[in-house]
Image 1 (spheres, rainbow, N blue to C red):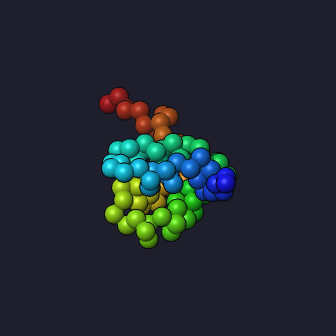
Image 2: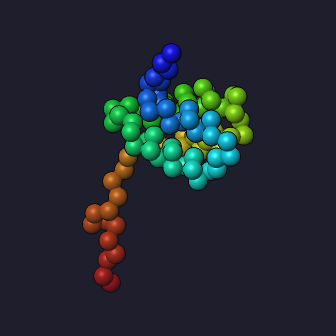
Image 3: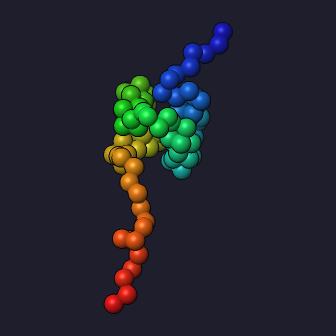
Length: 92
């Protein structure tokens, strides 16, 4: 029987992270980054992360991926441009 694809996690990265015994925070951050980079531009990362937390955290409150998702929820926001003339040091 084929598994149904989760629209929030089409590659199954988050699901598989929760299945890996002994996974650490570093590996979870790497998996989260891969997941985040594969998200569609038009979607809201906050909504997707919140839904993943709702889906996985109740059964896995102490899992490193739960912590990474919570950190991602806190730190995610609209993309901002960095650099340009304002970030360059001025000659005094």
